[in-house]
Amino acid sequence: MTNLEELDLAECRNLRTLPQSFGRLVNLKSLNLMHCKLECPPESFGRLENLTSLNLMFCNELKTLPSSFGGLKSLTTLDLANSHKLTELPAGVAQLSSLRTLYRGCCYSLQSLPAEGFGTSLQHLSLYQNERFGSLPESFGQLQSLAYINLSGGASNHSFKPMALKSLPESERARLEPSRRRP
Image (cartoon, rainbow, N blue to C red; front, side):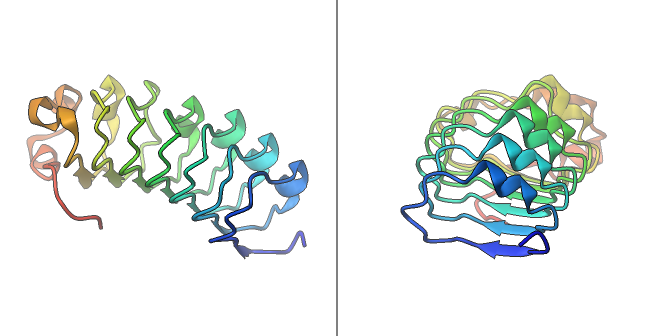
């Protein structure tokens, strides 16, 4: 099983845990856990260095991500949309140097993003309908590759002042308007 590259466990609604040995799937590139009842991936999850796509959408019991999450060096796409109990992202997301797309919409418990920020390669950030979300960290201004952001539908959206975006060139800020669609 160590040669496994794709694993689709979507709709496994009774799946609550993954074994610690899950980290041995070192060649895994794509993992779909959509609609599972996973509460927290094992600490060995960070050893999945070849993982490029992780779908945790609608994992409504997901409460936390392991501290080893920063070990996912090849991760380019992370979908956490509709994972309602996940209140924060671990500081390790700043170590995800390949992350280009992050979906975190409809996560009603999300209040903030890690102060450490994200890897500089982030291009698409979707935070739509996060009613408790407050503000962007100052480190957000370092996202020179960011081309799309969706902040629509949040309770704080009306008073949203993108202070962290002031360090971006004017041409970049113009493309960071709230939108109603997901790329």
